Length: 280
Ligand SMILES: O=C(O)CCC(=O)C(=O)O
Image (tube, rainbow, N blue to C red; front, side, top):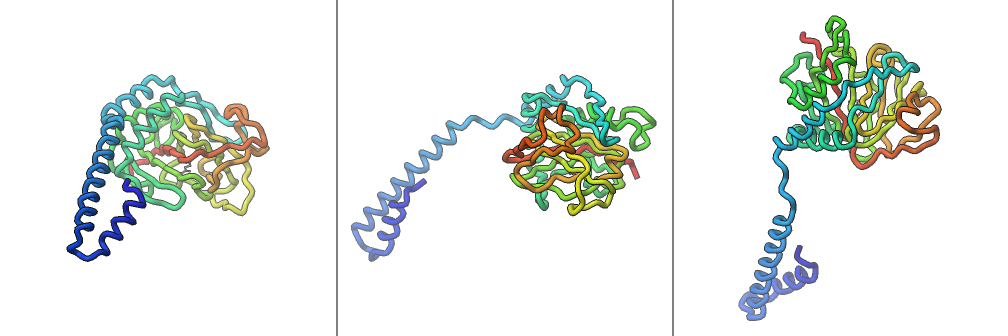
C-alpha cells in the first residue's frame, strides 16, 4: 500500500512542467517507493501459509465421513416425517466445510438471499446429470436410511443422488417453500451458521401464515424431511441474522436451547441439501 501523502505528492509532481529537475527526482523517488511496496507485498505473500491441495483437503474430509457412526433414526414426534440429529462433530464439520467450499469454488450461482452450487444436476431437471463427488457420495450413503422406501427404493436405504450447496451471507434466508414434486424427501446438513427453520401447514403456505413448528439446527446437524413434513408443510429460513427460540420449537432438548434463547446465525451459513431424484 502506498500511503496517501505519497499519492498527493505524486499528483503535485505530475502537475509541474515536463523538464523540471525536481520532477525528475520525484519520479525516481516514486519508482523507489513502488519497488519497496512490491517487495513488501512479495514478502507478505511468502509468509502466508501455502494453500493445501484440493486432493489433501478432500482426503481429510472423506476420512472424517468414513469414520462417522451410522446416523440415528431421530424422528421428531411433533411433526411426522421430520428428523433431526447431530451427525458431524466439530472437527469433521470444519473439514467437510473446507472441502465443500473448495469443491463449490467454480460453481456458485448468485441467487436471492443465497448463492447455490449444484452437484448431480440442476434441481428442476429430472435427470441426474453427473455422479456426486466422492465426499458427497459418502455423505449421501450415510443419509441413505433417511431415504428408505423413497424414489422406488423398495423399502431399503437409498442414498440421495443430488446435492444443492447453499451459502447465505449474514441475514440471508429463504421464503416458505417445499422442495418440489421431483423428490419425496430431503436431508439438509448444516456445515456453518446455526439457524431456526419455520414450518407452516399446507404445501402452499406463505409468510403471512403463522408457523406451526420451529426447528433449530447448528453446524453438524442434519434435518430430514419426508412424508407430511416434506409434502404437507412448507419450510422457511427467515431472512434475519438471529432467531429467537419459540414455544413451538420441536427440538429444544436435542438442540440444547430453551424458549427465549437467541440463536445467532453467524457470518456465513453453509448447508447441503440432499435429495433423491427418480430417473425420468
Ligand atoms: O439452508 C437450509 O437449511 C434450507 C435450505 C432449503 O430449504 C432449500 O435449499 O430448499
